Length: 55
Image (cartoon, rainbow, N blue to C red):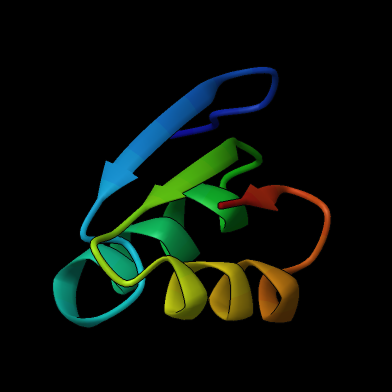
């Protein structure tokens, strides 16, 4: 499944299953907003993933 030019919001995206979903969506070409109760963890994870990830 290609997700180029698609946008996604993943809740709980800084850890666990959510983090895996974020990584898969980005691998498929999506831009992803990582929403998490721990905003610092979300920002750090987004920085690691590159320009397609946002927190």
